[in-house]
Length: 163
Image 1 (tube, rainbow, N blue to C red):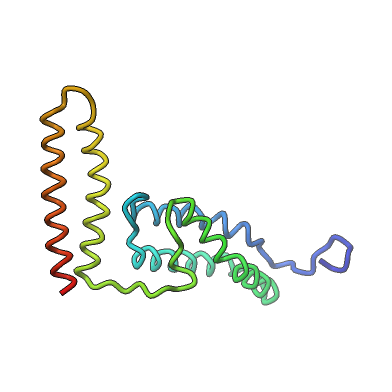
Image 2: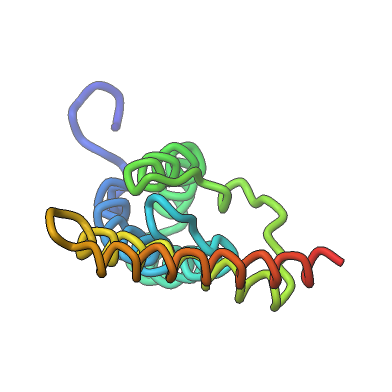
């Protein structure tokens, strides 16, 4: 603002809230696509995609801004980024490990195991729902067998990765 006159000297500035609203849905979709609330999240992929969303959209939104507008925008983004992302991750049932950057390098075998577990966990809920209820003995037996088979498969793969 120019003093207390109610006028701004920043004529080429876009409010940070516009940017936050613009990227919020995309980031939530990335989190939802790469994880399952009760099972886990493939952080390495999520962090890369979120970083790309932010970079791409920040570049577009900053084009019409002048130097002072960009400086103010960047300052506000820097001060709000971690809180904003923490809120989005927590809203989806996860912890934000992307910003500030944590060490998230997985071996390809571990990445496959994590992805398989996330898929298993989602499928497990569907199968359990199908097996619940009265007079569903055969579905319940099939569900338990499937769980045992998957558990043994995970244990073998985990042992192979650990050694």
